[in-house]
Image 1 (cartoon, rainbow, N blue to C red):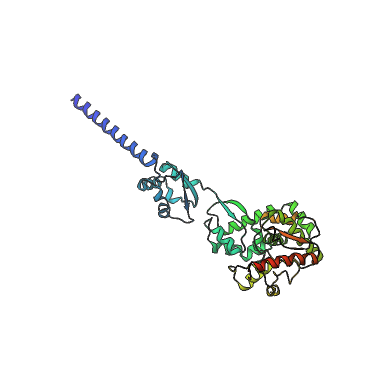
Image 2 (cartoon, rainbow, N blue to C red):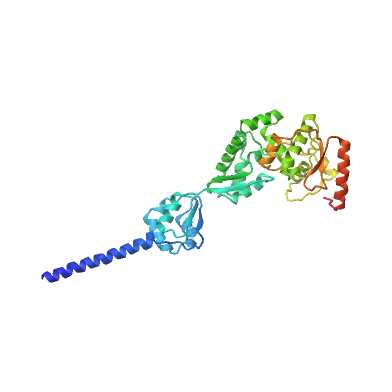
Length: 349
């Protein structure tokens, strides 16, 4: 009798140990064993706003060795009821528990970069390729009437507050959050020192940016921008027309609603276009920027070069740079040289 009892006890103990071993194996394989199928060091996961667990699984399934065990652990941890949108980074060799903890609480910012956009439409498209918000929602937010009024902007000046740079955003940032953040960055940029410099020029921050856009369109050479800025500021002080070809090009594109056209040469008839952006017809700075200037161009206006130049034309012997003149007679000689050169190139438009 005692022998039989011992056998039963031993049998129960053995079965218990086997059960525990099976359970331990299940816990290890389902929870603690590596469950990534990618070969790179890391994989990026993007979970949209209002995503369902099915949406998350569709995003994760190609990255997992065993999606069934992942689902089991996810359900056990209550993840389907607590899905968080965002950008997450899963590293090679992570187990199910680590993956779930990561996509539940470790939203990683993305770096959003943009520069030299000519219009809000182009900016919206560039940003939409880097965050969740689509280009239509971004453009609508940028042109939202309440947003413009609150920030003393209008459709012509709205581009001014988006300063070219690289910024960190959460991938699931909304369109309105993006615009609000950029206005904050704009206000931070216009510190007391820059505001004082703008005031000394007799220009508002938006006018500085509008002039900087012209400077940048005129020269791609960063070292020449302060000189070009000084030239235009000399003209403003004297009440002269800026006569900047890039403003005529912008006016033509805007009037014809065709920003895809490529214009290499401004014709005499273009100078007669009736547009407030045409600085051959209207004095002062245009009503808004003709493009998004670099910060180097903004600083070139604020820290302009002091000189007496009033005229400039492309320097055919030093490509990318300009010849500057203090008198119209000197400018006409420089311009004649340039016209001969461009005619020889066969550039008609």
